[in-house]
Length: 484
Image (cartoon, rainbow, N blue to C red; front, top):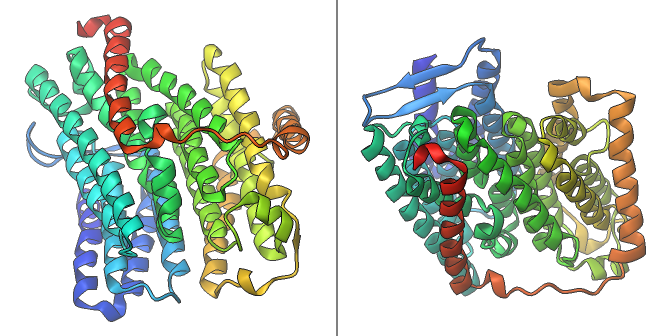
């Protein structure tokens, strides 16, 4: 299994360079990488016990492969396959598919790393690959958005690296377990880097512009899997070092509420989805032990909705309510929206029930409010008028095959938590969805509130990062007395 893991890790990077040499095989090779990850995830699910690999010594690479990792690897495989098929009949060049393969491989690496230096390298490779994909259209706008993303990401990673060095200074090891007993500034710096990189709380307000202004397939990759590359290590640390679990849960709750607070008022489809990505990452962090299943469900839903949003005749909900959308596209949006709202028969239902059962008492009320906000947000898609296909809404066959993969995954993933289907568990989500729809139709559909975007400006993002560092240091100092 060790040899298979190492070969699988290297495969994506190797294929990325082969694509550059054999451009005529770019689509097939990109798809093959995703299929290989799908097979590897299935193999990990069948493993009876976790696999710990230490390739060198304390300076080397430490890997942990278990079923928690497998959920995220599976998500990456399905989303990458869907995006590749979606782009199959487009004019994307081999350079695009090369970056998709490299991005896929580096994201996978973050799901099995359990030392801070290997994680740092993987996250930096992700930054470069994501930057190139965001800037792919080579317009002034796309290049600026990509540079903005890269600068924020690299600033966060610089602070993260300083924290990793302090951990090594304290324990002579870069292992995640080194957070136990580490100086508070080390924990604060590492967490700030991961929070900013993952789009968590106010450190993640770079995300809405980046995800909404990227090309549709890139937005699907970013929201579906890339942001989880920094969220996963936070959960892994919470599971390995119980003292940091309350901190991760706290930011999960705050993020869920912040993201959905923006999403319910947003009138732009892609910006609403981007803000809701922030919110859903909060759900993933709120109960780390079951975050893998929620991460899978969210990845499938959000990727499908970004692909759907790119196929609509307009990005403005008001215009869509006037023009209407195609019946088939509306049905795809309906399934995805039902799942993320927690409707039975789709994996979003089981994910929400499982997360709710693993919340602490102080989290319950706020997360219920966030769940209500989710139902309100996605009522915008559910209640769009729909009819016969118009010329502007025609999509290629790749779109529908992508929907088969992503939406089919939402039905199939019910197998992971079929115990959720009890009468008691079904009633609450249905009531929440119903209340959300009523609130949308009576209040939010007519609301004309436009939240300020000043907080998303570049200089404010860096300022917010500084404030978050102070907040994190205070939280660690007061909540983790062992590290003083």
